[in-house]
Length: 202
Image (cartoon, rainbow, N blue to C red; front, side, top):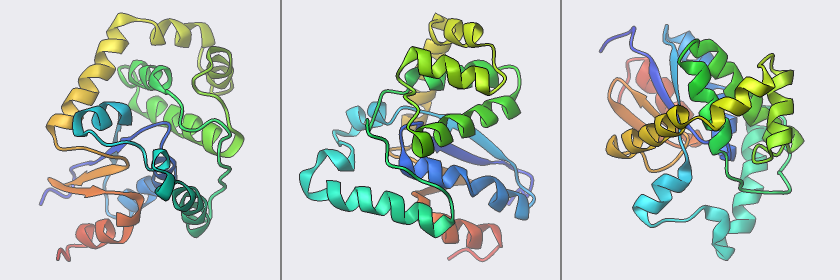
């Protein structure tokens, strides 16, 4: 086991569980001398590949899912407000992420936090160009450059490649973690990841 290898963290800007996991994964990794490698993907691409739909699209699951989003956030002690518009397309936020990551992974991770927190605590419409530019500006990112990035073919193709790579790696949902080659799916796998990193696999 390579103690220096980063934890791969796949997330979607429109995933409540990705938001919750994003608030604990870095601290957990740091406790074990690890870093986190962030991967923005679109769940829609994985759903299309698998033939699945978001839980809230199933009437029988919707009420429970909405309850569990908020309960899971409370369990982590983080704020959560169910967005009025949910889910939403987030490809532009993800393209900004990869644009930033190409120059500075730390800025990209900070943008991921800003986008996830903005959407799941204040209902910032990441699918609205004006709201997204405003969030970029509040995050010390040039809003015009951000808009140019999300419309740039280079970053459109980079996001498509990220989706294709994730699917090829077996990712079918978010949050998804890979620790030393071992995959873990879901915010509720925190204790298992902790145990794995502690050298007590099961």
